[in-house]
Length: 582
Image 1: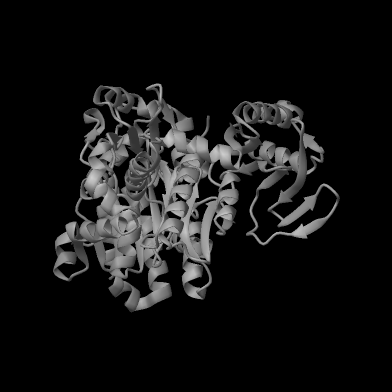
Image 2: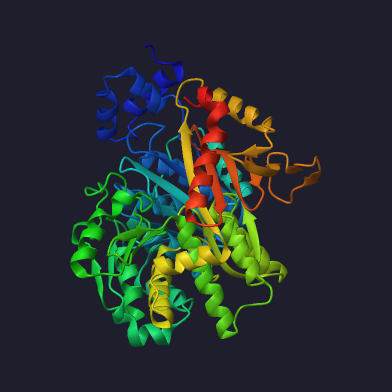
């Protein structure tokens, strides 16, 4: 294989210019597979609306200190262009999780910002993503940076940017930073020393003083503090931070609220970017609970809690009556917490008349039914918790609507407005509190409560499947599949009537009787087949990977019927596209 001209030029530059370290030069020169060299140097790692994420290693298409420096220079340019010296004085808050090179990337971020005259507040140790979101707002900073790749495999790291409202970047802000990065062709970003920057006040530490107010803000969202203070010891909890940043804050919030029977999985307690005990550090993966379940049995626990490396996602398992464990999906935890919050606040007389629940559009349709029964509006937003944060901001600006709860099916939850991102620290405390509340009120565990929700509002079962297209023509295949789906006019799927078809790329809905209406929703490449009686099938191409995700939400009068309906809808939906999905 012959290297492209761009790869050849980048290879010479990265191995000959003294700006790059000897280790970088050695790593690149020791690559024996030209395809690997091409992959690392033929293109730049892209900055998108979620920030940047990639494999660790040397090269323009990998996460390393040189990519972080260039990215941060683009962030600095955007901050100064929008806010000038006032924004520079407000500064940027920086946090990081347990992944490999996270501390180094965070420090380089602080150095580049300081060199540009922007104050940098760097946390002195691991912190969860939601605390970074909180800190941006608490300190009145112009922006924030979280160094993390969330729940991705150990080979990855990433860089998420937050703006002054504490939410991840809106598309226009992301575009401004991407343009600033693109405008600077030179990779050689100058940095002053830490000592120089500290002497001028441009490099400062953030630490325990933020922890205290953050945890106080989390505690303020809880609904039954007197109950947990008195009887928290009745609930046995096994917790695993999966080698990430959640260990200290989750244990602290549980202890502060009265949960004294908390056992932390020792093999997964310490931060470790190699994540040696799991294939992937993702609480959506049932295998991540293997050790927690073993200790849960030994400890006689009632609840298993798991957070991902940056502690913004929470997975839970509840003890079944027969002693086995039931792992909840993100949708199941979402409706469980929604029901707990709405019912508790209604009983306390604190449920606002203009209350709103916000969910990502691919999350379960059951959430809207529950919200309706409490006379609360349920709003759908595009995939990404930043859109929930955006809605919170709009409510505050307009005075219309009061945020009560937000969630997405990928294990993200938030109540309260202290942060603008999902918070597993809060969710862990809420789950523990809910387990105690239902036990003392009615003798139910969380599995019982979930079944009660289904019996009251319908059995909604959710599932998803992803197909990857990594061949050279993968993009064309994805486009062909979406075109075919847009032309799919079948009146029923798996025996269930298709009530309407929504194409969010053109913000248009077509009902089964031929009626057409406009959708008040951001344009996005998403198709939804809405089923009569509740539920849907959706197709959503990923914006960052060569992948299409399919989401299923199917209802039934009881669990066997819902399971049968889900299986039938899945099989029928994919049947015409079997050849295209291989």
